[in-house]
Image (tube, rainbow, N blue to C red; front, side, top):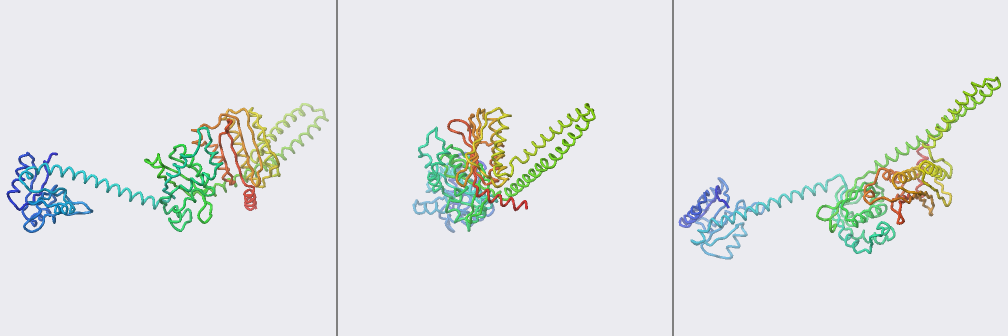
Amino acid sequence: MDLDRIDILLVEDEAAHAALVQRAFKARGEAVHLRHADTLAEARRQLERSLPDLAIVDLRLPDGDGIELLVVEDGMPLFPVVIMTSHGDEQVAVEAMKAGALDYVVKSEAMLVQMPRIVERVLREWGHIVERRRAEKALRESEIRFRSLFAHSPVAIWEADYAGVKTFLDLLPLTEQEDVRDYFDQHPEVVRACAHRVCILAVNEAAVQLFEADGAGPLQETASVLVAGEMGEAFKQELLAIHRGERLLELEAVARTLKGNRRDVTLRWTVPPGHEQDYSRVLISMVDVTERKRLEKEILEISGREQRRIGRDLHDGLGQLLGGVRFKIARLRQRLQRRGIEAEAEMLDEIDQFIAEAMTQARALAQGLSPVSVEEDGLTQALRGLVYTVERLGGIPCTLHVDEPVSIGDPEVATQLYRIAQEALTNAMRHSRATRLQVILAREGSSVTLTVRDNGVGIPKKAARREGMGLHIMRYRARMIQADLEVRNLPEGGTQVSCRFSTATTLRSSRALSANES
């Protein structure tokens, strides 16, 4: 190490020893700036003027001990110090090192001649210490910033340990061909066992408020809020992500607070760098979008009611008016024919054909705006018409199966189900390369399930991870009627879209809709 321009303070009361140290530096050709003080008081005066890069201090001075010059701030000396003594004493050496000295030298002619090398080594060690302390300080400041951001973030955040979940999943007897999602659906005890292995490490204040907890403690003590009820579906998606070795998952979910209140949330599940192998650190963030969903649903209901009104006006108003015009044309044609004016009568026939076409288009518009009638089997009839249209326009055989009459009391719910079937069939015609389509409407106790199947190529794995706009719209419509939507590949090939909802929910929605329209 080049010692040029190094400022060294030598505190030594014996002139011979001080001269020996000075000659040692000159012999090395080092152009160091060597200051000399022969008392403790003089050394303090020089330190007040400026701090050296290094101090060589005799342990015993005429007016005190050299250790007194060691000044420590925040657990670290202000400058490196080498202590010298005429008599070696292990206890003294220990005390000197505890006080902050970086080295301890027993004075002898041979040792003092080696002082430049000792200084070089001490300065090198001091550089490592300074760099390490700087890194530690930066790390502490970064940790403080992170904790502050974590604690005061407006987004609800959990820090969790999923290592136990990862280990448990690795032990499951899953084969390459097995549908892991089906396995979790068929083995709820496995999902519960995984939930018990989630360890919540920390939660922030926004999470406490979102889940209406009395503090971080009750929320941190249990992982049930992250997997209970409607959140169970989101947790299954997390298990699938771990099984696939993925680090990021974004989805929408429904959470229940500790007081039982419903919250619509957008959830982001992330594995930080360095924890990809064992999932020992996972960050889960949630944004409350309950109010936004409520407004979206209200807008959707208003739009649906307006569409139905326009449809009724087209059918009952414009349709009847055009029908009346056709009746008048028929009467006028009869009069012209009785008078023998055939050319004008034929012209009226052409006008009548134009009006008939206008009536057909008006009926089609009315049907598109309000596809489901208010009759008890309105959804079944609408689906039958949809299947016929798909088969006629798409050229793909399409069938409808309804084992028993299914009555949907809420026209809004029935319309959303129709739109989901319409979107699923449209996607199948565009992307599946299917040769057969099937729509099934079935009742299972208090639940009704609408299923759309095709025998096409299925959904590629990469595409399944990036849901398209059509699937987003279907999921959105399902959430609007509090239904569960599942899209999966069939073992025999093809894709199945299933929308399952409770008729009790339908009844509540129908009452709410009636109240709004009144």
